[in-house]
Image (cartoon, rainbow over all chains, first blue to last red):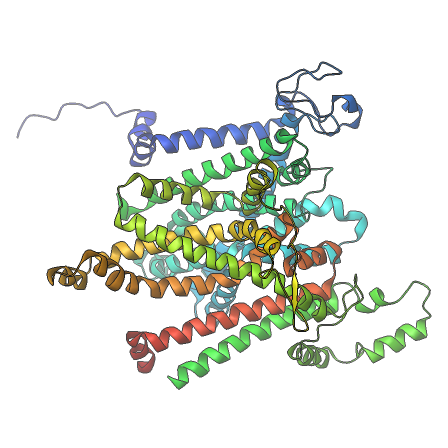
Length: 314
Length: 326
């Protein structure tokens, strides 16, 4: 073995990424690819809603009552305008309303996931790292929280917030209240997972080393333990995004969510339900379909992520 | 064993105390109870008088103790919107919710267990694959959309079943009303029970399937086969019996969430139960009803959890040994 090894060109960054385990398992699962493209399209459509939407559904000046109840893809009988997905009783374009509505749904979903993530991860880290009575208390509360359905907790938080906020501010604050209500009802799962992994990580040598060089508890937790427990958190967050969007839709459907002036997908479905018996099916069908597609694609992506990040399944 | 029972009992009591503290905090500090009871022009002395009779000027700890004492006697105050005692409002609507919850639990068990057994035994048949796919969809669909879909199919398109209400109800005794004795009552129950039970059904189906597959691999099943027992006897006499313990546990634990999720189903079908009342209370910030509902549901959850834990210890000798060792 005297001959020199052949000079091998280092593969480009992109090629490295393309060949990595994670990307490979992504490429080889067609359902996941389709689901993520669908999710991406829905997210982009929501983000760029003002650019895509053919009408501004919340500008009263642009609404014309004679446009009302146009069927999808057919010119209106009076005005001759064509609405892709039809229009509702006030002549509001359903397609535009869905774009703006999914925007609201997505904002509430993402913000509440962020809230429960920060809260849950912080409490889980503290519980696992500090231990003792603090741990017992936090985990006990998490147990209780987990045994209650999230929707019940969110309804209670919503009701209490209603009682505390003066009526004049209520409509503007609804979005914030929803984020808090949904965020507070989902933190326990993060806390439980993070505590579990923290208990394992804190006995490893690198944590001892970090402590030896004199770092305080918080830097150790945030800079050293947190990156090593982040994998499962990512999976939970993905699946929770679908759950949070559905939870928001449910609350809005129940009439305790976004007001009609700022409708989310749930509010749109609530409106649409009123036309169930009179035959204007498109007002109900299209928002529901978008909600289902969104939840389904995020769930499929989350399932893949869970399996891909699980070393046992490799 | 006795130590275990006492410890579990104490834990449950602590949870109920914590819940009561939350309920009391809501009741006392979110919206002033006195403001809700008096008009704008009520003289100050009268307001102060009312405050005194209600005991709102006493130390908070005393008030909390009285709140618990009253809650134990099922006195949760007076609803702000209906001006009626909360407990009679809840009691009036409890039969509707309980009947609905019972029927959907029954539905999820009677449909979920056979589906689970079938998908485990005939794993590769096309019917099993359909069941699996349906269960995936069932988990992804929000409850309210399932309800709307069923209404659209069976009420609007086919016109077979009513889309709202309980139908005709019959009064039994002083306060129980039932829809189970009339034809229209039964018809009205079908769609809401399926809507509410579908999620639990898919859960039970998956659980039975997983447990069944596990059990079929164990040695005693192999031994039963070696003894030459008939397949039917092995599957239903030996395997199914052993899968049912975890199934019953989960079903019991799910009973609480069925009652909580009834809020959504009751809204879709305008079912006159406790969930609909609670939702109206949330919309109108009717704190006494919210607090009482919270206490009742928590009590239900905590007692079911307690009973399941104790039954487990009673049934499973392995668990009993570890408890004794502690």
